Image (cartoon, rainbow, N blue to C red; front, side):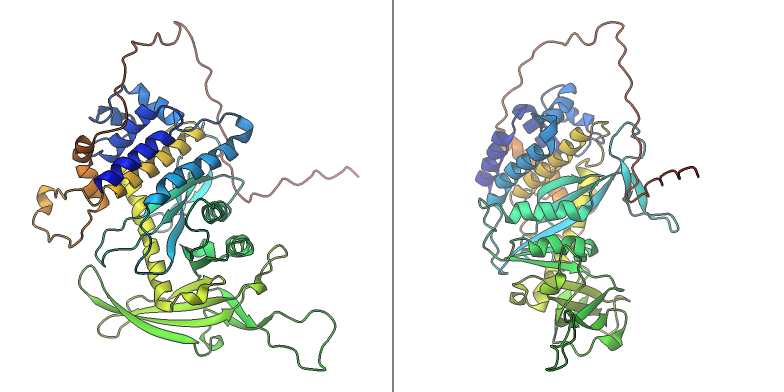
Length: 481
């Protein structure tokens, strides 16, 4: 594993277009950080060998577009380059017969950044009951690989592949569709012909996401998404009787299948059970039912009647036979190769989607994901991608990290896992890079900058409006009579 980590660091170092040495030091400082609470404080850590000003020049040099008019395409190409660096280190699946990926969107609140452009109202959970779950800022969509776990108590590691900002003129589903197409449509990656499954939340069960994905040339993709409990889907319409053909097209949709109306379900086409042990040692039993060949209404652009899917209901019971959760979990499984996945594999795949939530929490608490308070959108996007690379670097070092428990954790039972958790790997990463070294060269002192001319006054940044998505356009003034 040490050799793989060294080779990965060499590949990342060569992929940086500018400021390679400073960026590598910044990655090491972030991966081994245990004290810094802001981005600039990373310059005080031992791995960072430059001054505090180099922190900002490194972030700015992570990606710089050659032409502002083609900035979007250039960044997309750079994302693809970084993805090709990460993917060769993914372990191929052995316990399951498909690659598993997860897609999710997380908020980046910036309520006080009045000079930051393209801010909008974004969804952000709120712990206080009665408050609206919104914030002012940006959103970022992350597509990650979900590798197989060694056991039920294995740490929740993921491998983020791409992280892109959701602009105010687009939605998270639109960005997610592009990420999935870029991943599976790249012939240089090993996913083009292998069976792949992608798991997502309720946004991935909408026509705005399933329409572009199912109509793309992605025959090897199976999408697993959660359905809201009030959704209504349809059974295929029976063929018309002979001699009863009327004018017009025969209806594609038959009887309703309402998730909140049990009388419309009918007997399931398949059902099974599986048990699992919780981290506290409790044995839970999961009853899974599946209804096949259901349809959803599409749009003029995407005719969804050509893409049937399977609806799955999951209920969890404890040892006494009592329901653990009040509401069942409804899942959707769509794709031309969906029948190759069993109901248990679909449920297990969606259950692993929650590892994305652990990644976002760890990134925001330990990797300073939301701590870079910059007024430049491009620098903020650069920082999120740097955090992604730092997490992947920790994932590469998970097997060689020593677990160093804190004083109050020494009496806790040790986890029976061959790999360390993300936090434990971060605490030991400083020792690892001292042992394997760094591809970055020593910085050369270049003296002190002369700074700004005496008496120069910088023009204040202009304040940017907060964009409200879906706002009604102002009505045209009525003509005078």
